[in-house]
Length: 460
Image (cartoon, rainbow, N blue to C red; front, side, top):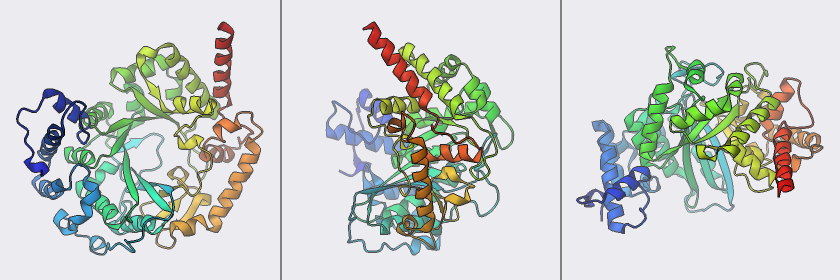
């Protein structure tokens, strides 16, 4: 049955509620016809938010079903208003050959450096021309992934700047290129990091349609957030971000918040920090210690010891206040690492060179986007090198040698087998600031876990 023709009369209230949270999934206890009908209703609801030109492009996708990205390449680029010559030239190479390996690749794509906020600690945003990735560079990035037959899965993390400033048409173009150029058997997924301060409804609708996972930057309580994350015009942004989160949650794409831990955030009583987040409807967060420029080591900085102390205070609060129902990515991952379980967190997974790349708007490749400004971590340009070439390059060999030396130094720490040296960016910044030691900085957290476990054993 075509989705557009699915009946919606008499749709049960519980189905409507379930579909608001996750429209593409079959609700529990409902038959397939009802789920299909609810999906059609959700798509029509999203369509009403689109301008007329965007609605016509949306209509081209309806027949593709619950996962339109799987068939997006069947829609001609011109029908979607994609007129850049890069789209006409986007012909897949060797489509008949599936991947030969099971490798994965994570690309942090700086699709634009334009931003509508001016965060006090941020060095990523830029103004003017040349700071938005062209369709040609996007096509080259996707083609480089597709031509690498060792890659079975690729995750594109849309980063900025502020990616929502790209608009629906440019976002749809990047998704079309992925569908058009990927090799059969390759699996591409997309997630996005946004400030959510000015999300147009059509952008939210597109993210829902293509099942994005959307993470939002929010720096804790209102007062701190509004000091650290002001708009380009100098006004507060907290209320707009909370509104954006509500709309993302309604669309079923909200994946949590990321909080940059500046010295001010670290000094905030954790009861106040978590309490205000919970009051705002936030029950999960990741916490990133603020870090200076990767090239010079200069700028806002929270020492690892201060970050570890902050995490310990958070852990103790949540351990004694389960009623808060608040999850912290770093604490969950560190506790799993302490128990020698899989963490699912790249910073605690050990060797990452060659599996993560940050892609600049001009096609420059670095090991992870955290190393913006570090000449040592620049690995060439996509116009000149494939990912296989980059992994085999002299620059990558030099980075691996440096990593081997770092591991030898950190292995003297009793917790190395648990943290695996933490993120190499942490060691890089410590070295830039003359503070490199024989511990990555997480030992106090593991010591705290051990002390609490010992006390529990004694009580038992």
